[in-house]
Amino acid sequence: MPKNVRKRTSLVRLRTLGSIENQGGKIFFKIIKCTDIGLSVGPIFFVLLIKKTARIMSMIEMYLKELEQESLTTRKMLSIVPNDKYDWQPHPKSMTIRSLATHIAELPTWITLALTTDELDFASAPYNPVMINNTNELMDLFEKSLVDGRTHLVAENEEKLSEPWTLRSGDEIFMKQTKAETVHHSLCQIIHHRAQLGVFLRLLDIPIPGSYGPSADEMGL
Image (cartoon, rainbow, N blue to C red; front, side, top):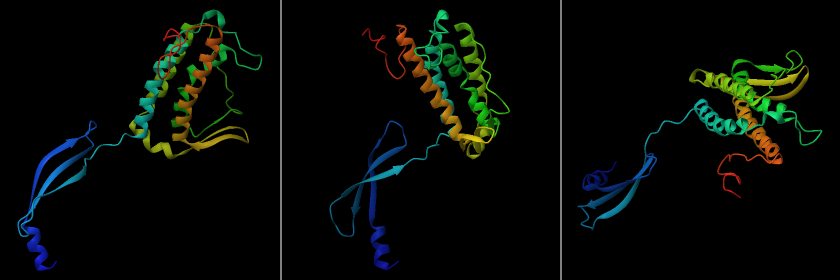
């Protein structure tokens, strides 16, 4: 570095006048006063943007957080299924409420399937849903499934998320994706079928809870 540059640098005085920090505490701005003695000019003000180090949430932690959040609404929706409507269906091609509600209650166990197996083959392991006859049994199934899925959303399984997972029936492949995508798909399926159940209950004129804000029933509309 040339002498004049070294000398000029040594004559710069910096003083922090203040700082502004955002609510998350991840980024803040410092207002700096810079005075160059050698050039005898007035003070120069500038803003220095500094990024603070923050720990990034792991995928497992994000999935666990989402599972816990969605379970609150799912629990409310399942708990209002009437005991005398389990065989009801809105259309001959639609599932019955029993089939739909049971599927929703079992879906957290697909997180376990994703993280403890490499595939599910219906040809060798046919789907045999639990027979649910009332809402108490439905809620028990959901809570057990929730515990089962939650148990496997632990830090040790983070490295498994990039591994492949397959859904098939013999030679017919329905789905081939990573275990991370399978966990995400399971969470999406809970949300999707829960909304479907909400439509079923609405058709039965049963007030339903809101999912991401108040429902029309909760607003008194």
